[in-house]
Length: 301
Image (cartoon, rainbow, N blue to C red; front, side, top):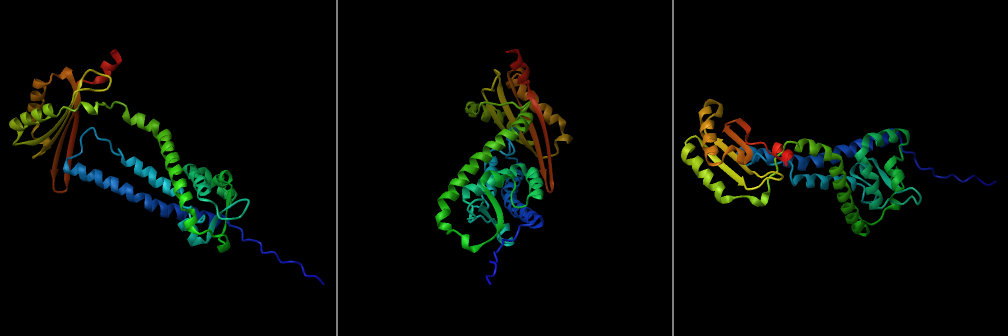
């Protein structure tokens, strides 16, 4: 009598295992993302305490590209044989939905791009643990790891690099589009000087004037730009490291402003004035606008 064939049915990935993999991946990759973020914060605070950050400097600047790069690394976390760090711990793998072979680096990158809308992905995962939205777009699903489908890592390097470069481009574009309203909001009221019009001679001359009059009280750093975008004004930025709390000697501020307006009439420039007082375990700053606001002039033109 012929015995029925006993097929080996793959174990089904449960909701609990799938969510555990997502959370563990998020935890591990967030820890990696935190490194450049902490570097940014430490760098900016270091510059702030040393008094080397100008009033007009932005918080992120070129560091934002590092953040986008690290996010791109996150999107490529499954690129090696369809297995991220969490999937290796939990013995899971991303495979091609049709062939059952390990997903390609490009497929893994595409499925992980949808983490940018992670709340929706979590909801879909609760309904279908093996296939979230990213899986359906990339043509993949999650299974328990089968060593027989492994592909040598050397054969994947070119594809991994290509997937990473595409991921960097997509993540950067996504950040620019989604954060543009916030950038516009934070940029409202910001004066933009023309960097190429920096006037070193006038900057050093005004610094020396302040130093001669107020050198016993403060150390000035002056930057003068001959042009502001959209307005026929100069831009003057003054950073003053004071030797005593500025609120205890308000007359020194008055002397500085009188001297400034004597050499540069108030209607000819816009800018910022910052006082910084540093003491052990203390940092006090005060920032105020100086000159005339360029926005009224922009509207009149």
